[in-house]
Image (tube, rainbow, N blue to C red; front, side):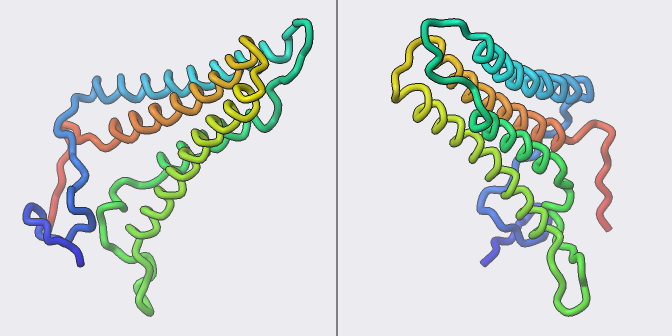
Amino acid sequence: MARWDLDNGRARICLIPMPRIPHLRAKARDAAVYLAGALFALGWWFFIDAAALSKNFEGDEKSVSVEFVDWVPGICSTLGMIIINCVDKASLRGDSFAFSSDGGTSVAWIARAFLFIGFAFMAGGLAGSISVMCIKYLIPDYGEPFAFWGICNVVQNALIMISAAMLWVAENTESEYEYNFAI
């Protein structure tokens, strides 16, 4: 059973409503977007650095290297970030119907499903990077440079998740010049 939201006069799904950050200035919003992009680039830079070090490693024995299985978590996290940021934020709050004939399908439900899929991709990417680090680099105990390659993979996925969260918050803030008209 949905709870009644006294502020908007509508039923809401969650017990605690999504917080709305009022009046974040336009320059602060732009700075947050740029910082999110920098974190995303830094995450991929960590991983590509580890891949380049792996390719050019000249040690006594090359037990393990960065391969395609190391790339999969970063690709999943990046795909999840793209999916999350493609969802129209206004459709998450609305109860409009995409197909009004024969019962219809809720646009908000579809948007929430896509949002869930995006977060699932990102969580799977982070969990996958931790799994690859543990199974491939830490459990066999190869030594110092090899563990660094696994750590770079986890750092990459964590930075992509932080970047996605920062971009989500920056896009969901209300500006001073935004007006919401309700009829």
